[in-house]
Length: 256
Image (cartoon, rainbow, N blue to C red; front, side, top):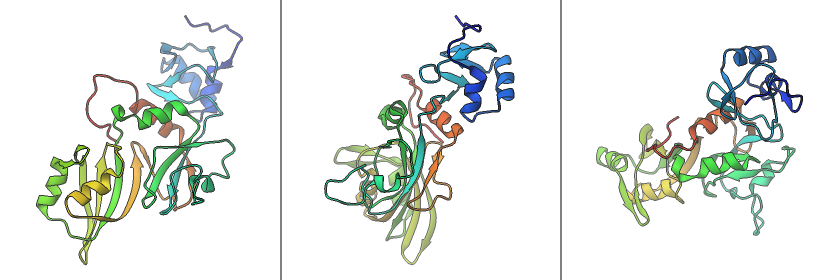
């Protein structure tokens, strides 16, 4: 049962405004219209919440109200190890997080020779959701291969190929450019097995010379330069939570 008169906690509209979702006045209007829930119940104006423990949703999308939680995207350069520390002294992700005021960890990995999007956060719940195979978030890569693509090879990757640890297939393929015997191709895949994209192209005799991850689910690099960070927007974080909601009956990849 809701307790509008409870003096504990922070007023709901202030929490929503602090999360960057809307102004306090707009938040009040959304509460009046029944668009806001706290712990699964429709909230009333005057409701107070604990920003750390209560779950707030606006129009069905999770709002991160804990101000201590941070979410970043790094455009990882080639040659950087996807760990926070490396025992061999190689350049690691920590080199690019010195401006972040709290300790963060990486969400998943990228091969050392691969580039592109890797998320950094201190939100363990969201990290576990993103990396759990049951949620099947689609990841997009751009692969440079030293051969032109023929139609049979293209359809073979879409239909599925057998690797040493089981079958794998692309969810989508798009040839961006072909020139001088080189092909730049975009591939969507929802799996997270180690070196999966490189192994798929190796299996069809089209080894990858350069691989860049450009998006994970609703989050993409935009115009982020290699070696630089940007904070995720509240909408991006909310969409990640929404797309990774537990749903045992769901099948197939979560599209962007």
